[in-house]
Amino acid sequence: MSHAAEKVLHQTVEHLRHNVTQLENQVRLLGLENEDLLQQLKDAGLQPRHPVLQADRLPPVLTIPDPATIAEAAARLTRSERRLGEELCAGQEVLMLLQSGTLTDVGLWIVPRRVWVVVTRTEVVFYAAGRTPLAQRVSFDHLYASLYNAVTGELVLAPNRDYRVARVKLPPLEGTQVLAQIYGALAPRKEGSA
Image 1 (tube, rainbow, N blue to C red):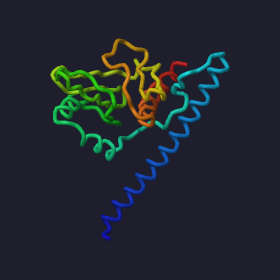
Image 2: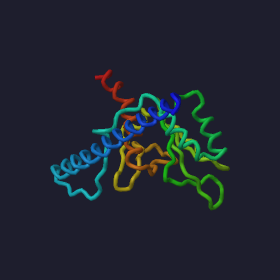
Image 3: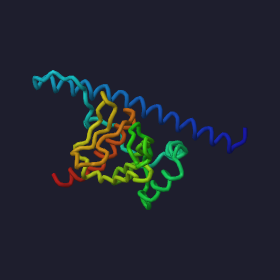
């Protein structure tokens, strides 16, 4: 095996180890958060029906993008989705690119399109290409009460400011990572104002 091939293999193995560790930590945190929230609701005299995950314990904030993960998601973009995403995020560093399970009407009659989620250092961008495209940019400053509902599998944008898309279906690991990015960016501002 050549030196270059060994280097690529080593980088791939390290990347996979990092991903596995991150996933294990996120699964553990999700379980702890749900247990804590259920106990808090019970202590308050409520009978919880829907465990909800909020931003008390979240995965570590991403400080650099993962090019392999972004490239994997980008490979699923259509040409028009790629163009719209590039327009909306021009000049910004993309930390995450996610294809949600949420469908939206973009003027293509009976063919709804999937909502794409882009996370930068300061905002979340939701978009879907079509005749009447969805192009929604939301600053982290406006998402200070957002949460991940583990029952419905949705990232819920809060407070709701009449967003065209106020919730998106994302797997738990992706949804909680988006929350980590939001709350991680807001935390230094809160500490500075205290």
